[in-house]
Amino acid sequence: MRFTVSATLALALSAAACARDNAAGNAETETAAANTAAAVVQQAEPAPSWDFPEEAWRSVDQDRLLYIETDHGMIVVELAPEFAPNHVARMRELAGERFYDFLVWHRVIDGFMAQGGGSRANPGHAADIPPLEAEFTIRRSGEPAVSELQDRVVNPREIPQMAKAGFWNGFHAGTQTAALAGITGDGRVQSWLLHCRGAAAMARTSDPNSALSQFYITTGSPDHLNATYTVWGRVRHGIQAVDAIRVGSAMEDPDFTPDIIRSMRVGSELPAEAQIGVEVIDTGSEAFAGYLDTLRDAQGNLPDICEITVPTRIEE
Image 1 (spheres, helix red, strand yellow):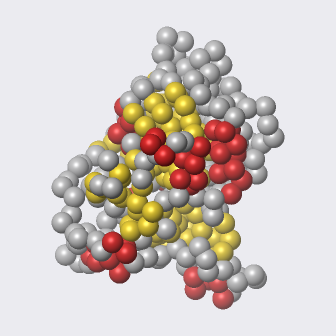
Image 2: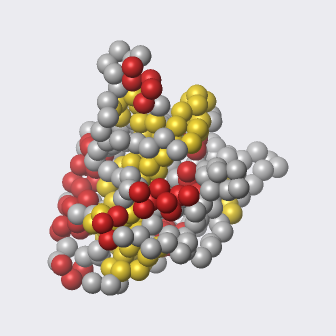
C-alpha cells in the first residue's frame, strides 16, 4: 500500500460577513456591509520535511469515513461521534437510505462554505424526520483529551470569552482549560470542534435545535460559527473538490445551476476496491509535537490553530 503525505500549511483568512438566514436548513451567515467584500487568502507552501515514524500514524476505520462523490472528485470526511453522536448517526442513516444522492449544493459562498442537501426545485428541501438537539459542545472530565496549545476566543461574535485551542485525535478543537474542572459543579469542562477550513457541520435555522438533513463544509475558517453550530466531521481528502463546487445560491438566483451530490456512502458500505485508505498523524504524539515546533516563529508562537494542517496519508 503506497501513501502520499499531505502536510501543506493552508492559510484561510476570511473577512466574509454573512447575514442570518432563517430559511430551513441554512447555516447562519452575515451579509457584508456595502463597502466590505469577502476575502480569502490561501497560501500553499511545500510540505515540511519531517519524517514521522510509522507508530505516529493512526488508520481511520472505514465506518468513520463518509464518501461524498461530486462533479469535481471524491470528498472523504472523517466522522467525530465523540463530539456529535446524534448528528453522526443522522448522517450515517441518511447516507444509508441514499437520501443525498442527486441532491445539490444549493448554497455556496466563496471562501466561506458549501451547503448541500437541497433540491433543484426546492432549496429548502429536507428529510421528513425529527429535528436534532444541538451538539455544539460536549462536557468532559478527561476523555476525549483536548490539547491546550494557545489562547483563543470561543466565538468573537456570540461567545467572546477566552478559552484554549488545540487538537483532539487530529481534529482542531476548542476547550475550556482543564484547570476549570476543579471549580465546576460536576468537574467537567466544555469542549467543541472548530470551524477551521474543511470542517463538516449541520445547517439549521435560528432555532438551535432545528437541524434536519442539510449540511455544509467550510472553505474558510468562520470563527463566528464556533460553538453555535454542530461540527460532526472533517475533510481528510478532497478539499480541492469542495473548493471547486460552483458558487451561487439557488435561494437567491433562479438562474443558478448548482453542482450535484452524486452519492454519499459510509466507507464500510463500499467494496474494498472502492475504499480509500486514510491515515492521520496522532496529534497527541511526540512526533506531532516536534512537527509543531517546526511551525513556531522566532518568539516560539504557533500559527493560529486553523492555519495548522494535520498531516494525512492517503492510499493511492
